[in-house]
Image 1: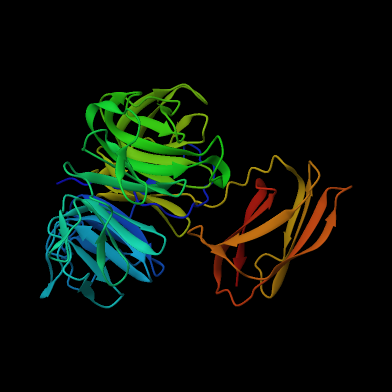
Image 2: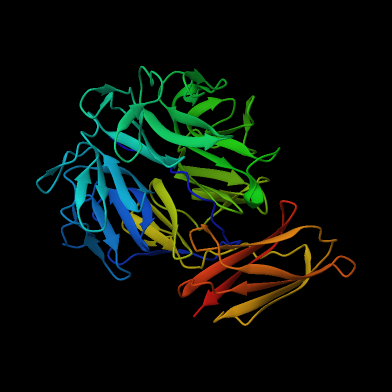
Length: 449
């Protein structure tokens, strides 16, 4: 069963890309389709249909990238992996498997960095998607019971010790995707209406998506990291034509076109929401005219105004997207990317960092960089600063809590100065984001040695 997956993650930060930049391979690649990608404990993991790497190394459906090659993850799993998620400092895999080595793991399993273990009695059939919300792990798929006897009907949640249902669940079809929008849980799939919403006790159909077979992916996204307001939507991608072909967005009351319709051949299969863009992956090939006439193939990015290309595309579907070490990675059914060999997994050859287009900034200094003990950020804005706030984030977009202090604010000259302490942060790449009353003023990257 081919999986369609979306995992909701903390918004990441992505540089504007040039079409001349390209996809490259990760070593010898993998032996068959990649359905899921995730970053756990600073490493990139891939799950899918493969049983070896692109050469002759045995890898049972899940593998870790060392930076030079793909290696086994414990005893692996005895069937396809469709979804990966990180929850409570462990990596979780879901799919159509039942055993890891000699350990029974019914369709969902936990990797703690050393061994695979079961989640109670697991699920009675495969799961397509995983999502973390309110410190609980959610799963969606074909299963109807969890832990052997708990009726859950295609969607369930795990609190670290037990499984429980979400209302009566979904009576039929397959759940392909999950997302949270305005603090409510949404699912997409092959059931009636394609998208349902959970109000805490019951499920209901959302709007009027029709004329097709399924919703494959969901994501809540707004440009510049917004999580409310008129530019914040729930996006749905899949095989449907009403109210628009292949991709639509929900504002809380109705569905509408996401600016560009996707062609009848090839649909979005996965979304990745980031700070600057909503990325989509799939098997599509759509002509666009902005910023200049070209085609968006396999992977596209949306800035809330138009869709643009990410490279020249793959030769088959993209099914997974993530950011690892500041670089966009993709997995899927392809064996070439931008015309070069990339067996089922590929990465961009440019750093994915913060969108550093500073239209609201006259001058900016961050020194010293690299940061050793502390650094100073000085900026002069094009408009008056009222309540400037500085946030520090790691390469995954996770907000950190080092000591940062506003040491100067001059509203007349529109200048601000912050002092950022190392505060025990390990060496690595970090990002800062300066906002004023929820408006992003500037962003940037720095290094800690």
